[in-house]
Length: 133
Image (cartoon, rainbow, N blue to C red; front, side):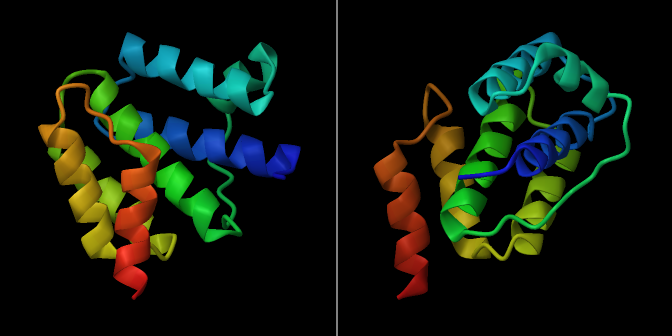
C-alpha cells in the first residue's frame, strides 16, 4: 500500500503533467480531483498541491509505475486535445520510471484508436508483460 507522501507525490506528478501544455482544462481538473478522492487526498491537500513545487518520488513497484503511466495517459486524453508536448513528456516520464518504450507506444496507440480513449486493464498489463519476455 502506498503512503500518504507517495500518494501526494503521484498526484503532484499528475498536476505537473496536466499543465505541460500551458493550461489546465476544466476536464483535467475534474479528472485530477477524482484521482485525489480515490487516493484519499482531502480537497484542501489537493488544492495545496497546485501551489507547491513538484515533489516527485520514485514509484516502487512496476505495477504502480504502469498504473501511474495509464493515469497520465488518461489525463492526456481527457481534454480532447492531444498536444505534442504531452506526448513527448509522457514518454520522458515513462522512461524515467523504467517502463519499456515499446510497450508505452503500443498502449498510447491503442488508446488513440479506441473511441473511449481507454484500454482494458488486462490489455495494459499484457502489453507490458510481453515486453519483459
